[in-house]
Image (tube, rainbow, N blue to C red; front, side, top):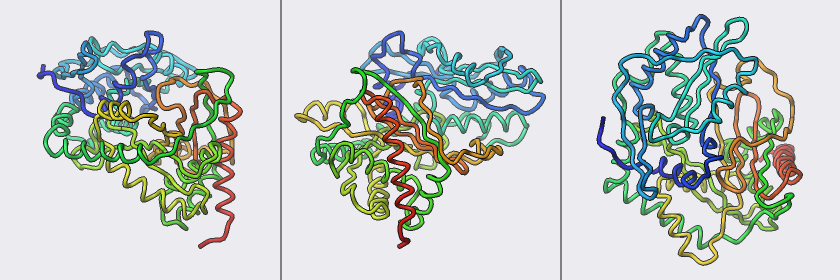
Length: 418
């Protein structure tokens, strides 16, 4: 067993969000995934592949000492000598079965932060239900694990060498070295500057009661086509175009033309850490001004502003919390935004499904952790999906915001090309 060390900055952000959760909500940091397995995969071969992954990635063997909530620690156990037993079940709905598996919280001090189960259809087709705590892996890292697992099952060379890779303990050590501390100071200054400049704007309370959390997802092939068209005109990414349209939509609701937005920074810009299995995401603020401008012009501005913001994505969340506490009447971000581009093989569109032109579905959120207003957009094949989770706003306003985003993209794309 290695010596205990501090959490990395990404892990610390997760801990900051979950440390005060009551027992009834301690399952909410869990993420559930359903991975299709090659024909003929047995429980034994799947368990052997998972054991190989745990040997390769230290995060899968990590435990956490959380007794001192202000100074949590982690350590890594040695690799297992033999594959663990993998439970096999039969399920008609693998997604529901995975969510059921995720509703059991992890005891991070006594068990590793992941579990898996082999689920079969009646025809014998196998799926791996994989559940992990968010402190163990973010969405990028989860996809790395899926790819590694399939390589292991196929006997193909993995993108990651068999030897143990660096883990979050190594990342934490680098982040607290002199160069890492300089980056933290720059990020701290970025927060201080924007908090001093940002206006006090907030989505109005239009929900049924305080604390009500609602969620809906918009899926549209038309919106993705429009975003790509606008991206070419603006010479900006689809993510920047969607963020520009989203900023305009929420700013209109707040009767302002300047919006403080939290962006999700992946923080995987250094080669050594790009494929690290851990949680590295952190929120970083950007100030989007002149949201009533032409959307192509706004997308250009947003593009460069977002790039500048994510440069400051690694910081000590406890220091930022202390900074906010020292500033009287600190403005809150209007909303948070995260854009995810999935590899083609991971999206439903790539599997032959033809997306509807546009659908909007109300959902029950699995978790209520996070910002008051959180839009997560996903570009997958031929469809743009935007999931919006909001507190104290209500279903009507939630869906109205999504339709506003959709209509803003389509209207701007129909405008004259520049």
